[in-house]
Image (cartoon, rainbow, N blue to C red; front, side, top):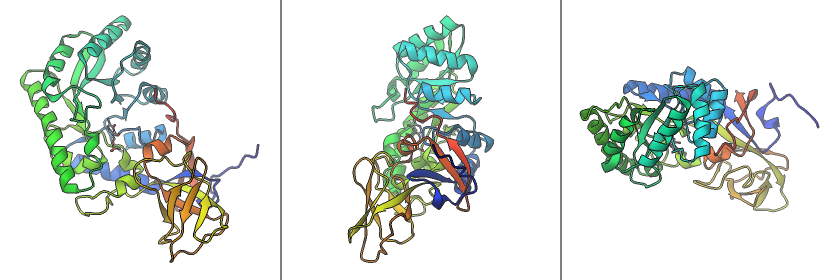
Length: 375
Ligand SMILES: Cc1ncc(COP(=O)(O)O)c(C=O)c1O
């Protein structure tokens, strides 16, 4: 098999389709979010589900975050293997086998945390930890009104009280992530919705504290609500994810400064795709379809060439269709186009590696080492 050393090569020469990270933009996005949180006296606990890359996780740790979040035990295993400690698992762990895997991780990383939204699950986790002679740090997962996971606001305190009685669990606080509000297009509507749900979670935090329950962590917030949720005094940290890479879905919602675009975090992640057929007047075919660009959220858009009038659409598993407008200069066969992806998290999960670039040249290749870790 032909091997090639891509370091130092122009990104336009890379084999496509491939994912490229502009390292300067990534660093700036990490700095901006870290600085914003700090200016409100909050910590960052960034979610790794976005980039699934321990190298980027380490960049976030170096920038000063308090720990990382993962969605699944298998992702936590990969971080533990990479020497990263103090990770929060933001989804419930409910089966016996997963609990065994969780306890293995806990033996490597005694600061590992998991959320709990159910009393039977709390008892099972307590029993699993006791069997291993370890203590598991936990947060009560509050349902933000979407019903996905977590206990209702009204039952949060009683779940906290139960956990406090279980000897092998260490109660640390609460999590409330209102995923359903993150992409509300209007900033004002998002503002109202987030304060409505997160305000109820803050009330549970106050109940914990008044009842003498430990609650030094109240984690939540996403990229869509980072500015809004910082206004909640009880919130201790933000578990934002997408701000690192960004995507068309997030870029098309309003921000506090702009009613049509969310410009605070430019796209660090792009996809390069090659034109492979130009035999038609009004469209060309590119080599990135469903297997390279996840089909959910907004439609990918063409970043390069700029102002091209090109519009991407999926065209089956392996191909995409680029519609040309009256002002478009038709691309030539073999030309490489650069796209902003629809939804960064599941798109990254389609690739083995990320090409890091500076000023358009490849400077590093990092594995998507949490790729496929969905258990
Ligand atoms: C529990 C949880 N926390 C944090 C995040 C990160 O949110 P965002 O990518 O909107 O910043 C997600 C994303 O889905 C999530 O599910």
